[in-house]
Amino acid sequence: MLFRSNCVVNLYPDKAAVYREAFRVLRPGGRVAIADVLARSPLSPEHRADLALLVGCIAGAATVAEVEGWLKAAGFEEVVIREKAGSEALVESWAPGHPAVAQVMSATVEARRP
Image 1: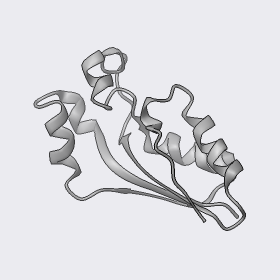
Image 2: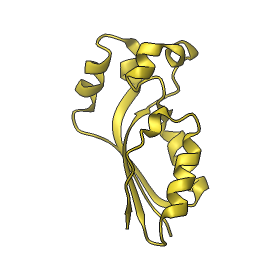
Image 3: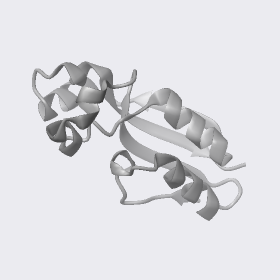
Image 4: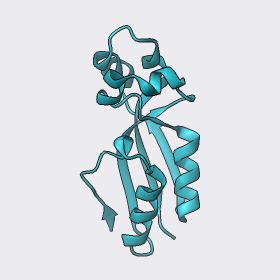
């Protein structure tokens, strides 16, 4: 079983809760696959507070390490996070020339419930 949702994890204040809920609804052996915007490194408080970046799904980006930790804490295994092809150009189109663009990527997040 593959868990699919129309939520934008990036915009949820409690992202860990999204992963816990995905784990809860999956049967053993089920997989989760999410496309999201993730940060390579923590964003500055100024970037997090920038409303234009928030609307553009940049300011709400969790780090790769945070997402991996939340998935594992929820109970998932086989966590794989990959940058999507063309990510740099896509993110640049959301906030042309903004320095925060270099810190984020469009990624796929996959994991399996044991």
